[in-house]
Image (cartoon, rainbow, N blue to C red; front, side, top):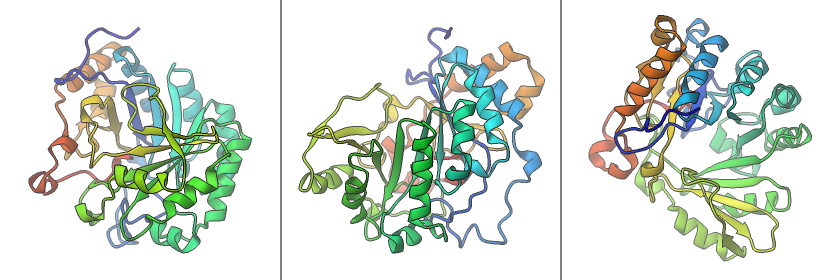
Length: 335
């Protein structure tokens, strides 16, 4: 049972935990892990530094009494972590809604095992349907067809809902939005468009490359008859729009143009066990020391104390000054 009134300084409860299980990825998407910064000479975390599955399970179970009801496994590319289904089995028994975010390249190999282990939902990153634009956005040799086959494998495994996340970057892939909507209409796959964000300091972000969601929506409404849909819960980040004939839905995530800090109930844990209370944070809290120094109840209290000091609202305060501040990289803490 959730403890009462365990909220941060802005009255937000901890409901959603994003857990990075590895900082490695087989893609080099320029907005997340640009090759010039994460090339062959980049030093990733040693695997011995990763939180063990036992440690991850302890953290999740310690957060449940605080109101946690949703866990998402991320990376890097989480399916690069060996035996991930074993972690899914552990967390499925913790009483949380469990999901996974992946680039889709390894889904055909793992979808059935993940589903049998208890995974319910999956989100796939796919920023283009045209091969040349996909290669530009992912900087990988993995083809669109391969990712689409991974999505089909997720469907065959019974994972639902399946969502596709697409980061829109002006001058690069904005023309892909309508093509993605066309492709996934009538398939049950929900396509969500995300504004290009200034996460970390290596992706070359500029405000001029951001296409506000309202502008993208106006563009899509010229081609599709879209009607607003209700959010499933107030803290959902995507504004939902559905085809008027019921043939599917899309989502718009507007972290830059319409910040949702006031409803943010998410925390993130890096692969080496640091807790971050904001996607745009510059530092985190070492949970590994807490895991081994205290028992379950004390770990819950320690995490509650961290959460109660939280006052993050970077996106609402975004400016030239805040953009110059150090920020942790997305590939380290997950999206």
